[in-house]
Amino acid sequence: MGFQQLQDIVDDARANGQYVEGSANATELAALTSLASTPGIRRVVEIGFNAGFSSHAFLSAHPDIVVTSFDLGEHSYGSRAKAQIDQDFPGRHTLITGDSLTTVPAFAEAHPGETFDLIFIDGGHSYEVASADIRNMARVADSDTVVVIDDLLPHRLWGEGVIKAWDEAIATGVVAQTTLYADGAEVDVVGPDAARAWAVGRYL
Image (cartoon, rainbow, N blue to C red):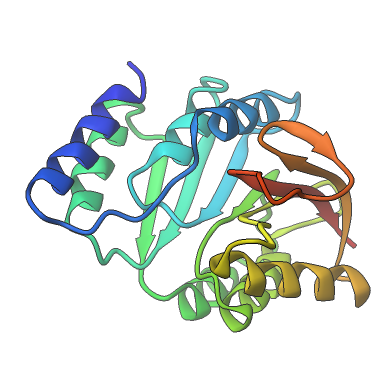
């Protein structure tokens, strides 16, 4: 049981001419697994399932972890990835498809008071969507919830909106950043050669 089956699904989709979105690399996936291994983390929620790599990382961290994923569900390979996750981790993963701008608030309203131990935000990369995802996820967080936001890459077009949304959330007291990472190393600033960058924080 590992990531290879998911990689095979992605490779097959590409071979058949399908567009495949990018996903976390091995370094980031290892960091997510390590973070999810922290004592007390059992309920994980993420925006952005894609091909299931981050879900697999979280679920493999501990046998008691359950994951809820929100995803647009636009890619046909996503259903194959979901089936693989269910085969590897039966009964431990829930996938909610649709626009996170509506599905996350709907979930929060349907589950009042329900919170998660770890939130991973890796959805739409525009400022508007990233900002809304950060705010909406606050509805399923408490003061102990760890929040991770991906793609804080100032030298990539898809990073600009996410960075603006995250910086604004910090400035307005929505979140507090505890650590910034670039390619698995703790940094003060993300350099122009970083392949992956993410931040860890908490909701205030």
